[in-house]
Image 1 (cartoon, rainbow, N blue to C red):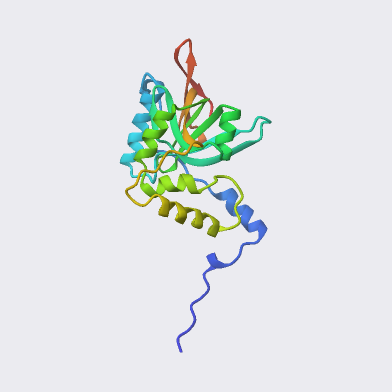
Image 2 (cartoon, rainbow, N blue to C red):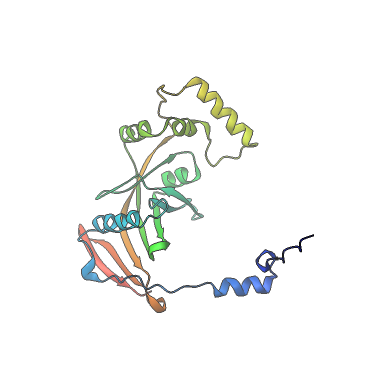
Length: 232
């Protein structure tokens, strides 16, 4: 009979003290690059696209994933990861269910922040700004470009609402598949569409050694952009 393998210490449950110590010890140094004022493009969207291209080139998983932070009218915050679907001089675009938590909060309190957490290349981009709805024609154009089942999902899911179980969602989706088979036109829901975050500030964060990171922020000034350095 073969001897049983020795237990892996990593499989043993950690006590509270060891868990705290392990969390406190997690750190790494950043030394890939630096960010100087003279390195920046004239506008934040140009700089964003330059860094986004780097993220794509480096093979990051879903480089267009961003944390969207919103707040209810009473100030209660919420955050979640969504996908960027457009970026130009007007702002940063996403699409969602208007009845979802993020949708209702952006409609009631049209301010938001975005964070692009590009950990693998020691960078992040932080956007703050005001929110505006996209014209319905723009939402319809994007909706038509989505895969067929993704369009059905926008109808099937009462996003952010409590549901009884997974079966409820699957049943709604199956019913829609029967109504709108593959190849048929799926109409744009009235409660679904795009939002644009119009930036007031855009910060570019580059990790540096000794936690002395480079933080350069564009801020709207008299119709243009000023650049300021923030202490890390």
